Length: 401
Image 1 (cartoon, rainbow, N blue to C red):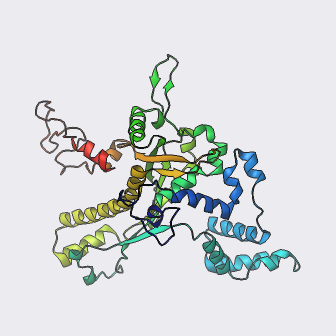
Image 2 (image 1 turned 180 degrees about the vertical axis):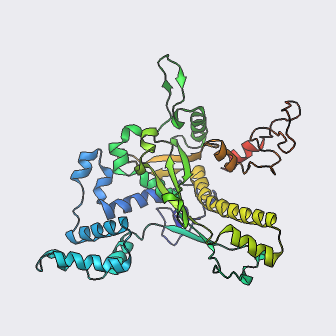
Image 3 (image 1 turned 120 degrees about the vertical axis):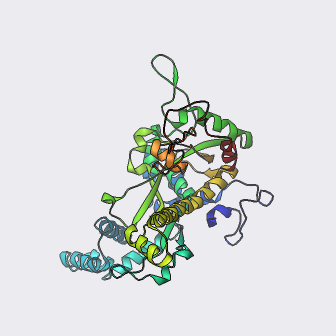
């Protein structure tokens, strides 16, 4: 569990209170309120977090030193162009060459690119990232790897940001909360069409959201529902060694959710640095698995990586859903208490199959997510034989989440 989840604002950083024991700690998660204040004091100035509108926000911005601004501009430009460390040194030399020898830039900018990256890293070290290495299955005997054309693949690494920190970021994002405030719906509401009929146009107008809001109010009278939506980005042309996982919030209506500003990267899942074909050959030669069993092993391993990533994310959300997440919302005087919720199953039919761990194919016995139709045998659907799936586990999952 992340350090921020288990640390409360009225305790020292060394005092760890376990969030899963209500008898030890009955309070809401308030450490993220302090995180928001720390974030603003470093970036905009501590007074700006209490701004009521964009004009008051601009007038209370702290002055950034010219040297820090030059560091930041160089760093952002270099990152946008994927400049290496060696080219970064050349980039700084070029700037110094083009400036007059008495120009302040020659005194502000260092000669080494490493100085700039180290400075930025020190200023952003309050961001937390959980890193975990996923071991290969022991029965794969990777120590016997002997491919002539490919080196031993590196272990898969997953990197996960604190999801609750990212949510707290969104609530104090000045672009979202001021410029797009009409597209942020903090409370459930009802929408009527031209005929006066109640319609569902987004998550916050759905029956599910209203029902969950009533459940939250039973435990927290002033609590608000916070729908959470996730997705996986394919990356640039799909040619990347890691898969970024992104999320947005259900309180944003469609116009805002389409913009990049509404999305955050939760983390990254590194891909296997080897082709499935080469790995299948290894499992066939050294483990004695047939090719079909080798494929099943690889797919199962990839699925476990995927599940482990979401296990870390859901652990954080589960604590916040139980205790409530107290955060500052920019433009609002008092902090608000939110309880994150996930709307299962959101997405198209393949996405629903993925969530339910049901895959289509000739070897799948029941491919339908609703009924027990025997896909292998085929034939007509018979209602009294091909009964619906037993969804009694749904209530149990609801309680756990």
